Every structure is written in C-alpha cells, then in structure tokens.
Length: 128
Length: 128
DNA sequence: ATCTTACATTGACGATCATCGATATGACCA
DNA sequence: TGGTCATATCGATGATCGTCAATGTAAGAT
Image (cartoon, rainbow over all chains, first blue to last red; front, side):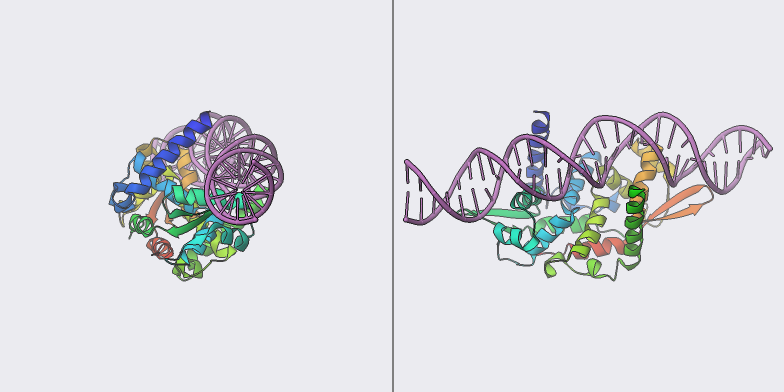
C-alpha cells in the first residue's frame, strides 16, 4: 500500500512533467542560471534517471534511430536479447519520463521519441 | 575486496572518459545516429547517472552558477543543509563522471564545471 | 609538538532498482 | 465461445544507491 501510493504520486508527477516539459522552469533554464530549488531538482533528476541505465539508452537509440517511423515493442525484445517484461518495464519508465511516446495500434505498442523533451534537457545542460 | 575492485574499474573507466569526453564516439554522436553498442551505453549511462540525483543537481547548479569562479566545499555544505560526508560523496561522483573539476588549494577543495563534458552530453541528446 | 580545521573514507542501514518468471489483460481470429 | 498473440503487471531476488555518524588524513595555526 505504501509503495503503491508512492508509485501513484510519482506517476502523477511524471505525467504532469510530460505535459509541461518544454515550458516549465525546469525545462527552459540552464543549471548555471543560479542555484535551483528542491522541486526543480527532483523533476530534472527524474528525467536524467530515465537516461541513467545502459539498457534504456540502447532501447532509446533503437527508437530514435527510426526517426519518425514508430518502433514496435516486439522488435526491441528480440534485438536486445532481454525478456519481454523487462522491455515493458523500461519502456514504461521512458514514457513516464516523457522521453518517448507510446501509441497503441491494435494489439501492438508503437514508440516514437519526443523531441521537445530532449530539447529541454539540452537547454538544462547549457553550461560554460 | 570485490566492491573495491569494481569501484576501481569504474573509476578508471570514468577517468578515461573524462579525457576523451569531447572526442570519443560516446560523446560526439547523437543517440539517433543508430543503435548504440553495449560499451557506449554503459559509458553514457554513467554520465547520466551522475546527474540523476536531486542533491547532485543542486550541488552542480551551485558550482555552475559561479561561472569561472571556483566554489569551496564548505560553502556547499552549509548552503544545502546536508552532512559534510554526503557532500564529499556526491562531489566525488561528479568529479569521477568528469562533470566538474577539483582543485586543491591548501586544505580547501575548489570546484569548477567542465564545459566539454556538458557539450558532449548535449550532442548525445540531439534528437528530432 | 599539539591542536584545530577541511576534507576523505569507512561501515552500516534503509530505500530504490534491474531483472526475471509467472500471471493477468486485452485485442484479434476461427 | 474458445484460443492465440502482444503487452502489462505482479512478486521475488540480488545489486546499487543516498545518507549519516564515526574515524582517518593532511594541512595550517599556536
């Protein structure tokens, strides 16, 4: 129950993030613009956390390499040699972070990158 | 012994990363350039992992906000309200990831950002 | 030489995570 | 209705992580 409530809160926060990723203060300003607040730090760290796993980066690059063309989950499973439940787990994290978008077509799930999210991260990293 | 060996290997890899961060394949190419390999994924994930913690982002923004002027560890400890050992722990991770540089002045440790590392991360995130 | 100051390292603890097999959901087909 | 396929969710397990108090280290100060 406790982890469920926590998970729900995190999921809700992530969903909110996704919708304002390109306009929020956490997405438009550089880390060098001044000491950031606790809330912004948590939001930004959540996005970086989604990128902080080798398998997720490989999944992401598989999706990104297709450009506008959507990628189906079954291809990812066989290309990377991990179990189907692990792929599903990672893709959910990437979607919750707003980095990729999920579209249901019949019984297939198709994924594409969300360019605005990456633009927001790049502006966060504009330092020096 | 096992964690020490592992830690040593990771530190060595991270140090190597720092020196080639701006020229290596993991630092100059976008994730969208094609499916990335296992080694590149581990290297890049290591850098994102250093950014994937709220407290480290706040420490980093404190350092980045000073521009060229170096920041001393004592200021970070009192500004963020965490213990001295925790600050030391986080700064070591940021230095090992090559995101900030450490300079010893007498008994004080001073920190500055490493712009090339952030440039490398930004080019990794050039998607869409 | 002794003491203080600034920082690093160690050891421990609770929390989170990645991964898997098993199972549930939900869409299509016969 | 029953069956198969694609994906999501659950439960468990071993690993990693963030944090702190305690201790170690090394550089000034007295």
